[in-house]
Length: 130
Image (cartoon, rainbow, N blue to C red; front, side):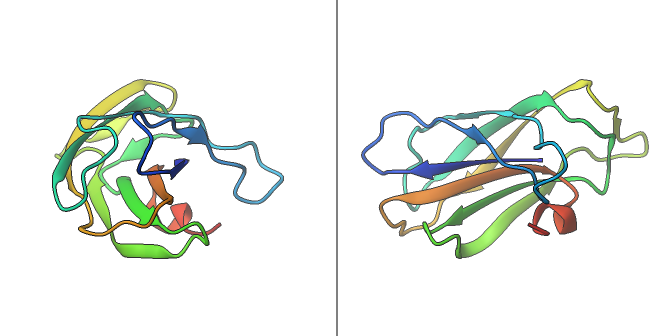
């Protein structure tokens, strides 16, 4: 379940787009909402990302929110930021139930212009199988 954005540093606001199907056959993952406290993100600073929406499968403690920066050739820039969607003994977000989580994300000190900002919710090995 992912959203990605080609991001130009001159833009004033970010628009996240729905990603295509992972395999070209299955339906694409649902679009999630992403709000940034500093939009666009400021290189070298922290930014608060608020991620919300409904996901088409159950999310458990092994599900993650992944935030990554890439160049336009889709090469990763730095290490992706990964946090659990939820924690605790009763961590379960049922499929198609609304969820919302805010996380402080360190922004890379140097970003190309333009770059891609990927925000994904799901199980990390599946996020990168595409």
